[in-house]
Amino acid sequence: MACLHDHSCEEHDCSSNWSLYQHIDLSKVFALNEATPGSVKSVFKAWEDRLNTSGEHLESNEGDPELLVFIPFTSDVKIKSISIVGGAYGTSPSKMRVFINREGIDFSDAQSMQAVQEWDLVENMQGVLEYQTRYSKFQSVANITLHFPESFGGDITEIYYIGFKGEATQLKRDAVANIVYELLPNPSDHKTRAESGGGLSQIE
Image 1 (tube, rainbow, N blue to C red):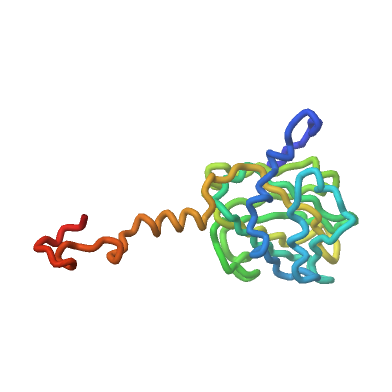
Image 2: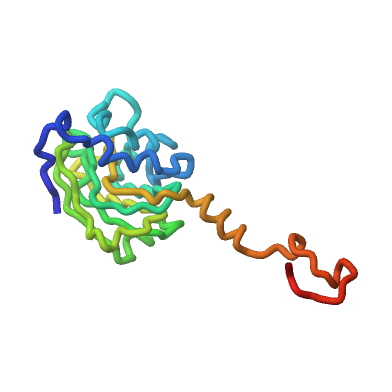
């Protein structure tokens, strides 16, 4: 379902609503079939910069509009909606399919797997549309893969902005790993009396 972004962002704090880009592990983001390697990272930016088309953008290889974008997060997130700003002249993606917490998906997998959710997109060059998720299915998202099978008739697919509205957990994933590690007892940290010459083996 697409919703119209029909209010003034000067009166509403839209930037904070769409701030999940700050929780994207950008160094690990990648796309399959991108014409310029690494260009996918340029589409994740602040809400207020979503219509800036002067810089780098994501573009598929000529004659093949299909794109697959893998996005990991630094902490688990809950995603309420997604916004896509595509190119003009039929180069915007016309369909989006989403997979959650699945790593290593290629085009063959994406074409054969059941998506968590999919949308028929609308050309959204003005950045006024957002696509609502089935929110109960978008909890504890560690990574998300977006599959764009085709454009609106163009030989390529162009994307200038991908935004996520939602919220992140307070703890980053590496912090959670450290907490789990600290909870596990380390025998070397707990000398027994038997080891130090006493007659008991109870851990102090």
